[in-house]
Image 1 (tube, rainbow, N blue to C red):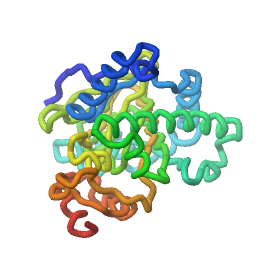
Image 2 (cartoon, rainbow, N blue to C red):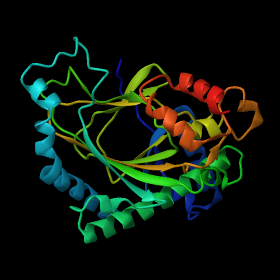
Image 3 (cartoon, one colour):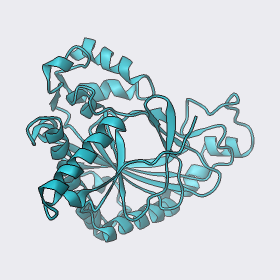
Length: 314
């Protein structure tokens, strides 16, 4: 069942101190409730420049139109679906995704040079955008740590040196959205995910409380969308859950998604922050080992993955 709920919107200007300790405390409490009860939320007044956000969206649309769109619609999946040769068995397929994507790593190394079609001025603007997104992620990490009763640098230090990368995705209009998902249901492996998404076309859905799919509408007012990954759930001992989500394919319009991942580095060691959670969650383990196991279980059950990792790595 898909329902309509008001996803929390956190005004981060309350953290700046301009409104005094009371406003900061209220904002911290709102963030804590959003992380604990939802695992996903909107942020506004987040410090990422609106002009940079607009530039990145224009870049993604232009890059898709010039380099990806024709190739996507020439793929076997697109041609078969359009010609009526693809049969998902009466339900959306659990084997394919209706999306076209590429991934750029930013830290600890930058792989934008692997995309020679991206000119130097655009690379510089992407770097400026990512720098602001990392600042936002670190700010949220500090607030989450404090809200969990930990030292403010706990999550940041657990991730250090962090891996930062961005998945650039387009979900083209689909002739048979009843037969495929834009992206199948999964949780994210990493830490804090910051999403710059479409202003007009929806499709993203989160499973709240394991019961109801909540649609995430198009972006309004320069907001960014935040969701938490598996490593935040482990560190928090389940207090801040990583939530299953998916993208529905749509017949009308195309949907843009620019997801920046603030994750532990491959050699970062992750474990529950408190001993009481050790029985339910894996750790300590290398995030790189977790990620390798995740690659084959991304669309499977998260709790089963946690227990398998616990047996394999600690």
